Image (cartoon, rainbow, N blue to C red; front, top):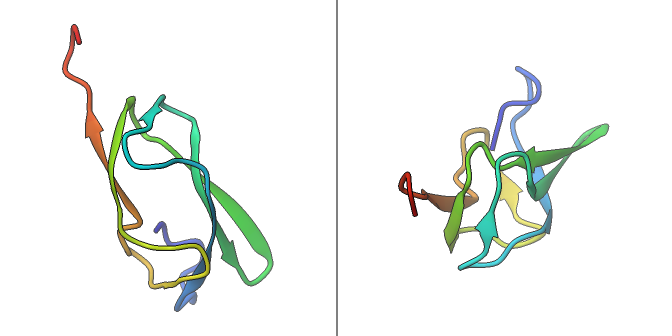
Length: 77
């Protein structure tokens, strides 16, 4: 989870827009983080495949928490 505000201790995981084995493209929304006065859509930083989801909707997340794991695609695949 990204740090939205330097004073933020935690945020809530909102909707998760992907599933394990989903193919994602750079810029695609993966999940939503709900903080005090903001809902932040977290986008895929790269093209790849979701290989693991470590948190569930409603979970309290600390800054730096890993919500999901992506496997990048090899060039030419």
